[in-house]
Length: 144
Ligand code: AMP
Image (cartoon, rainbow, N blue to C red; front, side, top):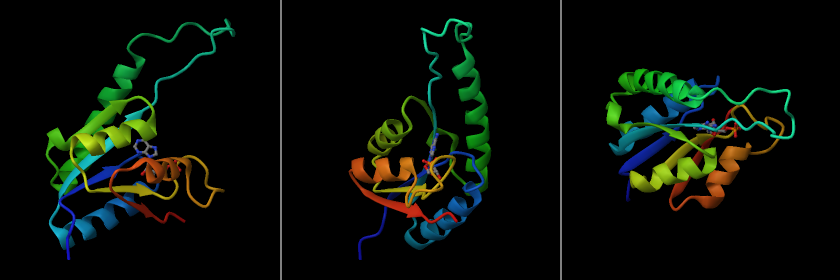
């Protein structure tokens, strides 16, 4: 049976992360795959017609990206994932997860069935979007 060569784990740092990590470690042991981690920061949008808000402080996203990179590398250390396999992207969560999967030639993407959004849905919005756009297998780990 073919196994996976490169797994991409999408991490949102929610309470579901530990469950995702455990499942990923087990699967990785089974197939001996490389592992990459990705976290996406969505740019903050301010409605320009609502001028009570000040402009977005420049560099806010960069600051968030730096913090996320440190967190991701810390997670990577626990999983023996090198820092150059820990990717923090800026943009739309779905598109950036898919872009990252393509760039690292992942043949499996692991996401939680639910994270911060849409607990009421059968499948959360990110899992659903990734499933529909992925060029490879997707494992949606059930988060209760
Ligand atoms: P949600 O769409 O919030 O229900 O999230 C479902 C799953 O999508 C999470 O468990 C993560 O695996 C992934 N995910 C959600 N947001 C992000 C993010 N900003 N960066 C990386 N992965 C994410």
